[in-house]
Amino acid sequence: MQIDGISQVHGSQPIRQPHMSPADMAPRVASPAAGGDQLEISEVANRLQQVHDLPDVRADRVAELRAAIANGTYETSQRLDQAVERLLDELA
Image 1 (spheres, rainbow, N blue to C red):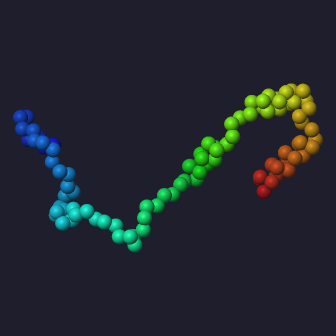
Image 2 (image 1 turned 60 degrees about the vertical axis):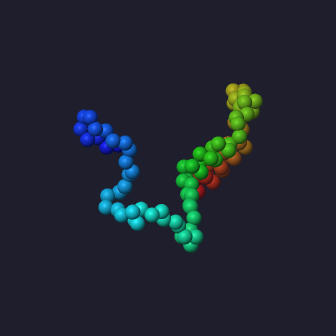
Image 3 (image 1 turned 90 degrees about the horizontal axis):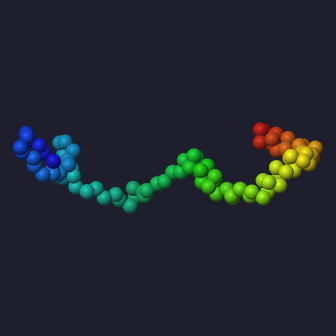
């Protein structure tokens, strides 16, 4: 749109970059040798997808484990040894 003062408003105008001739504005067609589109997925997007793929929480299993912890029957020496081994494996 072009506005020339208070009373003169003209319709829309084509948008052109400065100093371009009509020949420069001709549509450019990519050659097949130039390659195609490319998509790169970020590490954050990969992690988010992994989170979405996780199974739902099993409320019955959580309740069972909470009860075992409350009763003192969950923490056995075998479980603690296994937890320490897994922790050391992840840190190594």
